[in-house]
Length: 402
Image (cartoon, rainbow, N blue to C red; front, side, top):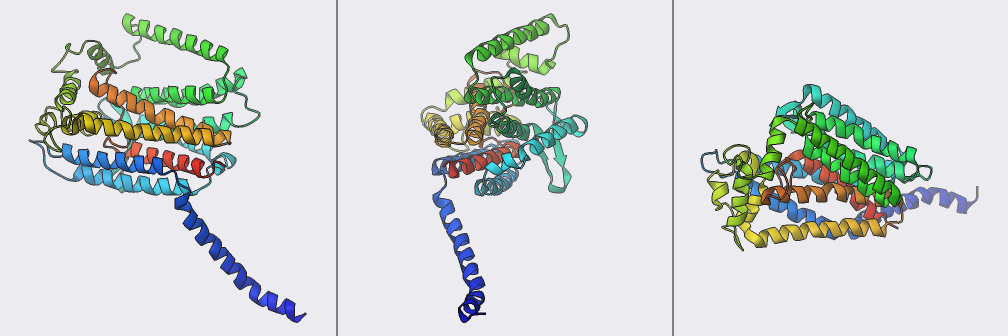
């Protein structure tokens, strides 16, 4: 062996090791620079606002002043941050090529079936699975929304899967109908209805022709009309009595002010009494005196608490943060050349922004009460974990957009 070869063989591994270490450090240093900071800062702001007002709702007169809700939410945010970081640091395209999207979807279907048998029943809906080892409940329907987004994105980004072929379109619709049906059996109308804009948004982005859109609209109108007639006639009602009462109260807010319409009425009073700058954190009378009960003030109606205590200015800043998230989603969808990533971005947007519209609408009386949380602000771990994972994947799409 020549001396040059001996020297190269002796020094080669150390040089290679140094190159590998250099590549690792380079990747770590380049990670922050590749992030979408509009998304990151918006999420941090919304999560922070949520913590502040969850803490505020824990100080109601007549209830035990405790950091319990605050501490639990903080723990869920910590878990969500880990999921976000892991998802953001991995190349999202591996989800498609390694069939993880299909496995995730099937796992969520299994949990949706399981929750019907062993789930915890709260407010008339069997939607939660209690995980005793970690002392918390999870809502499979929240994670099923993301699983549908990933599956539809993988399906319609496959060249052989043409959205304008009827068989392919029906297969995609079936992928939505299965979890939708299981969620409605819980029953959880609020979570189930979110799957509709997810499907519409992705197939529209995939290039569905207008004739199919018009046919689908007509079909939905016919089915919806049939369901309404079915409920009116009372033949075999699909909605539970409390759901029907919510719709009646929405149509006539003064129908049952001390019963089904109580929370909605108190929420509107809270919104109207906040004025321009609010009454101050923890100083809202509807919240602190318990007129808006703690059972709903920190989740379904937390926007009303914000409106009362932070006023129009606080509400405006929150809506501005959601608009920044919307901008982040649209920018990512337009910037990526990969159809899979584009559909993921659109699907995630179609999860989050209908939540915002429905929840804020509930608080001001323009949509029925459905139990849909305000994204990243309402108390609850399932949406925080799912939402942080979803936006971590979206961050990965942004990082690998070229």
